[in-house]
Each structure stands twice: as structure tokens, then as C-alpha cells.
Image 1 (cartoon, rainbow, N blue to C red):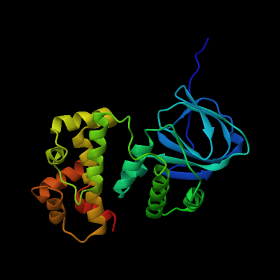
Image 2 (image 1 turned 45 degrees about the vertical axis):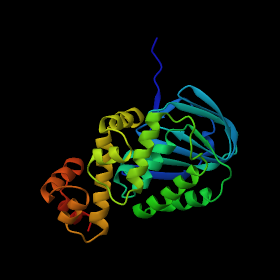
Image 3 (image 1 turned 120 degrees about the vertical axis):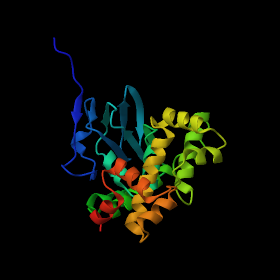
Image 4 (image 1 turned 180 degrees about the vertical axis):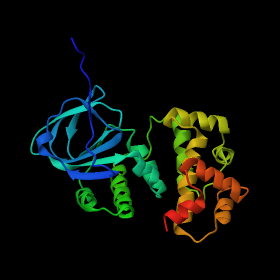
Length: 269
């Protein structure tokens, strides 16, 4: 007797990092499957039914957002006709974005399986436009607006938040709201009244990354923004990010991007 295998679906066209399409009513009932390394967000404006994700069943009450993480196994039974959109997001779309808020909002949304919305609002309009847009910078702006509208439906204060998660979220908030990113974990730990070790432990527990790894991702994104959008010299950018000299910054940037800052600037001009 042969064992069952989990179906792995890949709905992406080659080279695409973000895909938005209206819900396909031929797929109101699906078999258990997982996705080939991408996040799926399903906005449902009109339907009802059941959704099972990683063995946990929940009732679908539109309007809502279903969040299917890249390693999750899921299936659903929906009542036709279904109105809504399916948004597929590759990690590289988030990683390559120069908008620091997108990664934070994707991370926040990904902690949920379902987000129930108070109303549809402008979400259908945003997704309709996003489904037709090919310019990556415009895509980022529209996608960020969509995420922001979804997050309006989540209570800002989560009473079940653990101490470690609270520390992690405060760290992320600092990185997003501080006037400039500094390449020094101890700098942020001091502001948060904790030790670098405690901060890193909290980050690993809640994101599988150390505080240094999270900080590095923010530094690289901020560096790309400064290189792309300003006329500052590489040395000025290095100093503004807390590096002692241009050489150390260039080595750091190349370690994470495969390019020197000068090569990145030339490539994106």
C-alpha cells in the first residue's frame, strides 16, 4: 500500500513576486495541499463555509481574510458564488521592498489564520487596482495600503501577549519608528531597558531570528533606501547607519546583498 502525499501547488507565473487575482469559483472546494514557498492571503467579501489549516477548523464569515503561510497545509469548502481576491506573495517581494513597514505588517498578519473584517471598505478597490498593476513601486504602495486596512481590524493591544513577544514587538516598533537605524543591538536593548542577550532571546522565540539578524535586515533596507532616494555619498550613508568607516559598511552590505553599495547604486540608476 502506498502512502498519501500532500499536494504542493504553485500558482505563480515565472519571475512574478506578487500576484493578485479574483477568486476562481471553480475552486470552492479544495483538497488538502500546501504552497510552493509563498504566502497566500484570501480576501472573501461574500461567501460562507469552513476552512481547515494545519488541522484546525474555523468557520468562514465574510468579510474576512484567510492567511495561509508557506508551510501550512489547508483546504476549504465554500458556498458559491464566492466574491473576493487571492493574493500570493513571495518572500523575495517583501525582502526586496524598500518600504520597511511592509515586512512588519506581513509579520503581524502572519500570526493569524483568519482576520474577520468589520466591513469591506476600500479593500476590493485596492485589490482590483493591484491585480492590474505591474510597476513594482506602485505595487508596494497598494499592497502596503491593503495590509494597513486589514490591520485596522486587529486590536492594537493584544492582552495575551507574552513578555518575550511584547519585547520583540517593541523592538520592531523601535526599528520602524526611530528616526534612523543604528547598527548596534545594545543601543536598542538599552532603550528597551533590557540586555542584548534578553532581546536576542525574545527575537529568536518570536521570529526564529536573532536581534542582530533582524537589525541587519532593517539596516540593509534603510541603506538601499538612502542609496536609491538620496544623493548622499556612500561614506555619509555608512556614518548615518552607525558604521565607523566606508569600508566596513561596504563589506557588510555585500555580505547580505552580493553587491557593494556602489554596484547597487549603478545597477538601480
